[in-house]
Image (cartoon, rainbow over all chains, first blue to last red; front, side, top):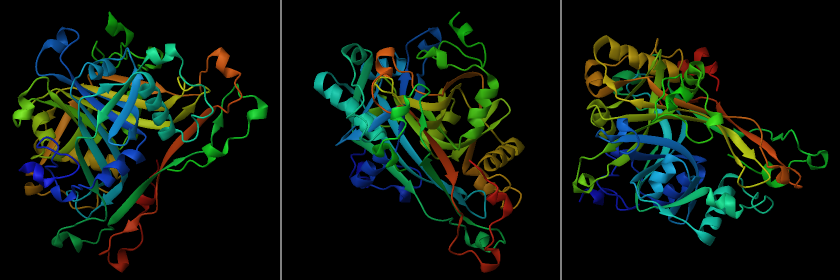
Length: 231
Length: 231
């Protein structure tokens, strides 16, 4: 019945937002919006293998940043076939994929009520390894998520490059999202203190593109599709 | 002998950068710089407890964002005493704390060589729970890391608020850092393709502060210490 607290997106006792439940947002559009707005995700796995230092229980977690993209009700991410993280994910280890968008700081009159505004999504599950056309399409999706418009002109992966790349698909089945927005919520006694209070928003912006050292002069003009990128 | 690849900061076979080793940076100043530049960290733990769905092996990882600060050779972070993440960390579970600073996108002529510029730090270990004066000082350190200059004027935590907060200390003993910077490294055959190539830096900036709805008019002026914040 705990899952009834978050009927959608699919949540369980593992993903129910236990802290500050009033900040739990259960709208799938919000989940998609958070995932579509992020540039990197942190993917965590538990490793009980490796050297002797890893054989001891409990398992050692590893959390690493990855490039990703959402496709319908899945998250796609890719990395080196030889990396530990991707070997573990490909082998079926339970994973946690977390995307956090920091929107600003909330300056309350008390240290205790001071906090951050953010949008966060967490996805638990197991990854499927993509092959063939699905793998190629996933790489295009990730490229277009990060660099909209670029896939049509860059050289696509060769067979050898595809072999060196693991592309994983994580379904958006067991998810939680948390959104914290707005101003400080000082207790009555604190609100009267003579201290400035409010929020300081944080903005992420693309800077002017820097051409590669070996870019030929006739290509100096930055393509429009890149100039249109906005954060 | 693998650890010899990363003599410092203290690295082991668990934290040795296995992929793109040429990007491994082993200078402790760089580690400190990455940790000091970040606003949030992602902390991962492996949970084998909880409901039946958690009792199955292997362990389920959870990665959640936290506010943190570096203090000398430790990382401090805090959260609700009642949260699962902090209960597990406080109980001595192995943790992974990861800070990732995304500096921009690297647009190569090939999809395979396209990448991101970033600075990342990963710290593995076990947390110590802080109490008393050390706990209070850690909260000040975290506050001053995120909101420099504010601690001197805000209301400090009450005993009740301190009881509701778990403050953890993770030593910078088993660490890895990875720094990717610069332009694209296209293969010879690709460098001649008629495609714009370069980098698109990503910048994070503080926006104009927004006063709280209940801020009294005589406090409308934003304090100088806040105006001086820079990303």
